[in-house]
Length: 289
Length: 291
Image (cartoon, rainbow over all chains, first blue to last red; front, side, top):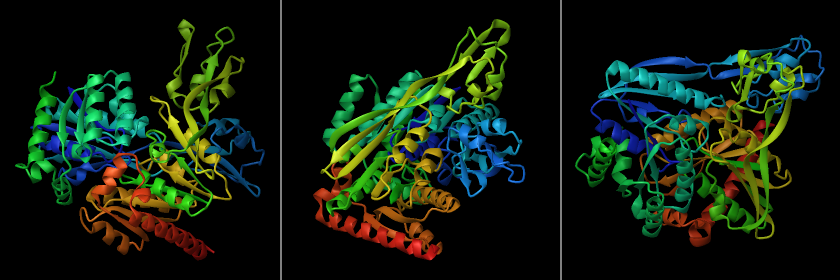
């Protein structure tokens, strides 16, 4: 099985637009949208026949006021400042609670219990050339990395079912837990960058992370025509690091038009120069072994 | 007063908004600080070129096990909710996985034989820069490979001075790092772009902020691209549109070079000053309607 992830460090560089295009170019594919905070690919990949499942992201503590003797032990022990005292009642600040359960253990009255966080969902659906899995982490719920792992597990199952070897992962921005979970154990990563100082800064950090996981790295420069000098700087740095640049895409309003019309760019304007360039990227990516 | 600049989708222009807002506020003579809470990929410092004032290492506690004292009873493993301690009793083997540890202290509480002590592990840095004598930029930056930026963000925001304005440049998304930032804010400026992806992610951010009961307003960036659905969404849900920044190639170019648009294009300087006034009015309005 080949797992290819599209990541970027910096947000808004065009990850999802490129992922959508690559997904529609594949003959048979499972798409795993691992941006569990803000999944978008379902808007352009025509998913159908939805299955929705609950994801228990973790647990949060709740204090039973009737049993509480106001000793304050829970507040003293909590390292997340998640317990607040107002007048004479102790309360858990839901958004601060990390679910470690230490308060339930130190409470002499056994007044604290844990409740499941079950507002997050994950989805499986059919797309014209395969399946897609995506998820929605409820606002403020934890363990986005674990949800990414779940999406990837489901994608692998779907790939077996579908009898395909290919999984395409659209990753989240950043380099924290969901990005780490999107990178772990994959074969190739395409890093979408842009010629800006922040783009280059962010690329360097995610390259470092991807190298840590020994993943084969490719770079695509998006909106390369934004600045020729910074585009050159980006290329020079990649060359120095021996990272192949497998494509350079110009800024093109057609990409936005495609999105507005609920299509990937390669489906919306298959004969455009940018779609042609993306097909070249795709060919390089699946041929490079 | 703390104003967070946030968005569900990455790359909508949070940093553009935060740094330029900070710039015009400090130009009008206000004491204002900027805290870059996008600790995974902090970029504010490229636009706000201040004088380095100091750097502080941010650490978390990691349990260290004294194997001479450890009885391999397994209590710490049982108490750890993060699978960060593995014990193989038959082999008298115990191991701590530092990357998985959340620094909750449960293992230390569990241990009856005094075998656990704490060691500090660096998870990132807080760097302070002085800008035009009366303003500060604080940059939070997690080390590559660290899972969660939440403890670092919390620590960065703790340093905010309550008597003055502080701008928080929030991380993208709606999960823990975002919550850790906006939860500390008195008002949130949500930045979006007028595209289907922008709208989808705006909806999620709006739900999150309404759930947390934090007042907010919306700025549309790259106006003129895409379609009118974001405008329609705001009107239908009676959400305040604070400003619209046009799609302008000059903005993209200045941004790519690490330049502030409010220092280079006077029309935008004026627009950001007016935006600041509108944010202040919106905060007062929200405050009045609350009391």
